[in-house]
Length: 346
Image 1 (tube, rainbow, N blue to C red):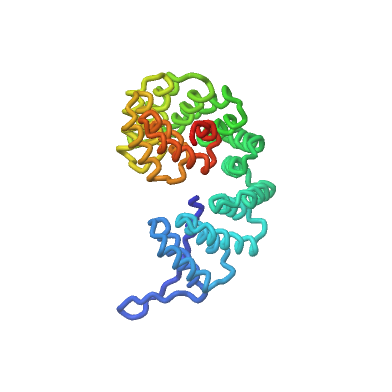
Image 2 (image 1 turned 90 degrees about the vertical axis):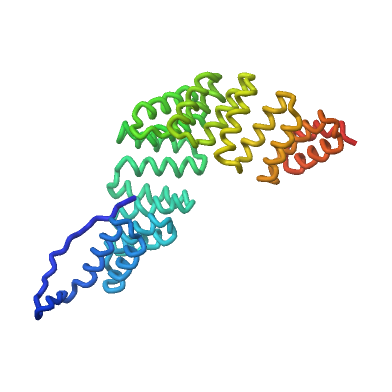
């Protein structure tokens, strides 16, 4: 969101005495501060940029470009509320500024106000802002609201504007997965991968999960997760997901290896600890399974499935009291399946 435009000003300077003191022409102070703010922004010195653009606004309270670009600085600083305020001020000064509407919509989106974002994106489009990104971000807002049909339409509009829009293709794939259009989703991910110059690992991961969970293509899923890991060797989610795919092939030792790799990178990954416990359980290594579930619960004390699974491991270790206590806790945390396990508990 680097919408800052550098406007160079021709400043008149006068030589006064041998010290060559610079005298600024009256009325140029705001513009000088503005340009200094833009230069600081280009140097990624956001604190100075914010200060200088604020100085320009203080000198000239109706300086709409200064408000617009200060909002851009605030976006970089993740001050979305502040950015929204500045874009709103721009629109008070110039209601037909479609770029300010688009940018405020983007700020609303990042601030978690999806409905407001959609309204701004639609207004920007009505005023003539029809770049692919406005349709893309509108699709993201619809997706966040679980309005998947509308999200699919918006992502498709973005792709019609730019058929190499990798993120729009990926996100339409995820939307189509939610709409149970699995083959179309796979094609979107595949097209995104073929066009992706930056090799985003998450697209391989997304296609892998689609293939594993919905297309019964476990080998294809493992290949996708492996490609994701080649791109990003610290991609813990891909290790965890590949571990689950290997688990589904009954290759429990290989699953353990992947879960351990994920945990070597991020020891606070509760899902991987739970899955490691499940793999150990299948290998009849119940003590190790319990240790893994303990770690998952330590990280997330409300992890209901980890309690359920630990109860099953305790049962096989003849710790019936402990098993019943875990199943009771799982039930309290909303795990309906726990009710069946509790039938044998007094």
